[in-house]
Each structure stands twice: as structure tokens, then as C-alpha cells.
Amino acid sequence: MIRPRISKNDIDQQILQAAQSAGTGEPDPIMASSAPPGIGMTQPKGQWKWEQPPAITDPNQAIDSIIDQFDQTKDNIVKLMVAGVSVEEIVTTVTFNAFMEGQVNPDVAELIKPALTLYLMKLADDVDAPFKLYAEDPQSNEISDVELFRTMKQRNPEMFTQLKENVNQGLRMAKAKPVEQPQQRQQAPQNFLEMGDV
Image 1 (cartoon, rainbow, N blue to C red):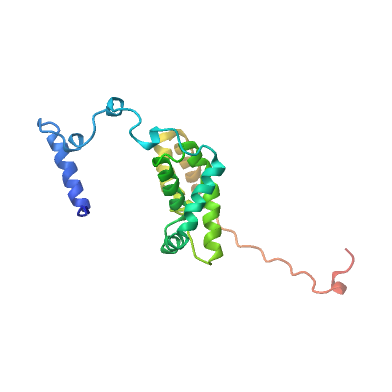
Image 2 (image 1 turned 90 degrees about the vertical axis):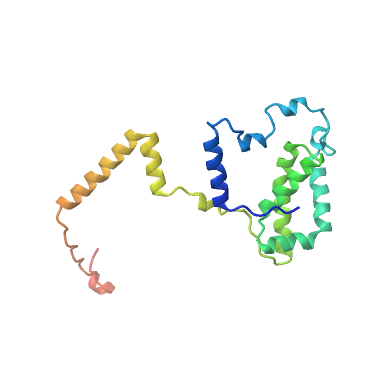
């Protein structure tokens, strides 16, 4: 069943209504749809596959098993990479599904990620398919100077004040000091005869 897509305005309205109804005694729609705390402790143990011992405990066997699955669907995996799905996303999804199905435990799932990443990169390289390694470019997570100074002002106001004073002092000194014209350098001789003794 496909749910209709909810717009951001609809979500904002629902949140606003929930916040307004918090003090009126009306039930909170967010809390009404969530499980009560501790519900997992009251359920019978072992009903989910991840609650059972994993089928594979050796990382090498887990890698072989998943690569066998990749080999059966190579074309689809390459199509996903060409479509723009990153290698990171594919590996994360596959290892999470292996855990959910009870094939591996979380530790093995994390241990096999690098090997699966290398395998998918080689697979894409073998067929000359373009691929993205990460879902987001790691350089895009750099903190801007504005954000750095805003955080510094809140978290370390002494350092911010000191830095601000140093910058202001540099600006005052630059204004007070007249700009000197660069001196023209004396042109060096062009050949060995003009150089003379050194």
C-alpha cells in the first residue's frame, strides 16, 4: 500500500496542533501512535530472526555468502550504481538486511563492510560504470567560518573575544600604517660577463 506524500506544511500543521493540544487534555497524536516504553521487555523472546544466534559467525564466510548474492544480481547492482546510488548505501543496506534476516550479528556486519565496498568498486570498474563511493561528499561536511565563529561565541566566549580583539587590532594597525610603494628591484645581469666576480 502506497501512502500519499505529506507536504512539509501538513507536517508543520500537525506538529503545531500537537503542541497546542498538549495542555488541553486531548491525546497527543505522536504518543498515541508509538509503543509504550519497555514494550520489548514484555514480548516473548526469540520471535525475530535477529534474536536468534546468527547463521554465520565467520566474517570470511559472510563475505563469500553476500558476494555470491551479488554475483546473482550483478546487472541490477551496476544499474543502481549508474543511477546514482552510492556504494556506501548499497553496502549498508545489504549488511543491515543480513542482520535483520539473522544471517550475521551486528559486529560481523560492520567487519565485512570494507570488503564488500572494495568488491562493488571493482565490479563497477570492470564494466566501466560510473559510481559514487559515498552518499554525501565528505568535504561538504566542512564547517563554514560563520558557523565556527557562531559556535565559538556560544561555547568559548573568552577565545572568541580574544580572537575578535586580535582581528580588530590588526585592522587598526593596517589603517594607521601608510601603504608603502614596493621598491623596484635592481635588474640582475642577463649574462655571465655582466655578472663579474661573485
